[in-house]
Amino acid sequence: MRPLPRNGLTVDLEDWFSLVRRRLWGTSGPPTDRVVPATRRLLDLLDEAGTRATFFVLGEVAESFPDLVREVAKRGHELGSHGHGHWRVDAIGPERFREELRRSSAAIQDAAGVRPVGHRAPEFSITPASTWAFDVLGAEGFVYDSSVFPIRHPRYGMPGAPVEPYDAPSGIRELPLATLQLFRWRLPAAGGGYLRYLPYGVIEGAVGRANQRGAPAVLYVHPYEFDPEPLGFPDSPPTMNGRVFITMQNAFRRRSPERLARLLRTFQFGPLREIA
Image: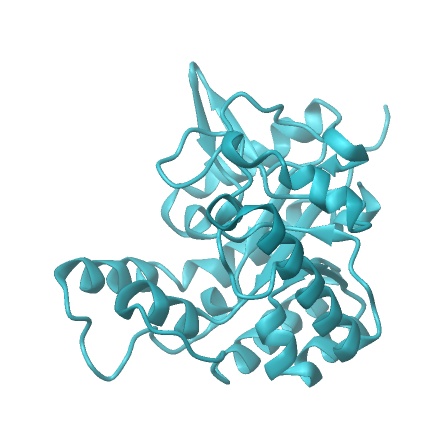
């Protein structure tokens, strides 16, 4: 019997507070220092499991907290690019996307002396409307991407894409996010909020079925999902939608460390460069 493949574990290294400020209030600001202890808590969990991951680093975080990015690299994890300012790829166009890649790569290299070869778009925003991004990634020297979520979703997704790693245009290796086929439905099962909200068996089933096919499953988490303090701001959001958004982000967050640790005990995981 051939050994089961190693799966890909990824972390989108971003600060929830700076991103939600932009989404709810329309204002921008640098990442807050809450990202530092939250990331270190996640790093400690990975150390305990003896697991290494790929951290897709936001350029703004690398500029604001270079010591944190250096620590991630020193603990043995791969550094990839998550863009610079967390702008959706399908909203900014090719030239600004190229600028985002260059700024984030420079910030990561300045912080840790490593030039990333892997990329993940903010909000999985390489969609059917932005496949031109593969050409830009190839021209900028990237080797692989992990932005395609092969599901149907209001904000992202490429439902017709393969569910296993494949060769995208311009020589880019695409490592899509994990899904689970249930009858005629393809469910998202890659982590993040899905790790908290869905029954644990859906996530474990997605990884197990991928491995049975001889394919790796790619999962993701965020540092703020491992922050023990509630997410929020001193002032209430100005709209009901804002209150609902923050409530949903706080819901079931205690599940994230427990469920990730369980997955790490059940399956083998590693950085994406090892499966790209």
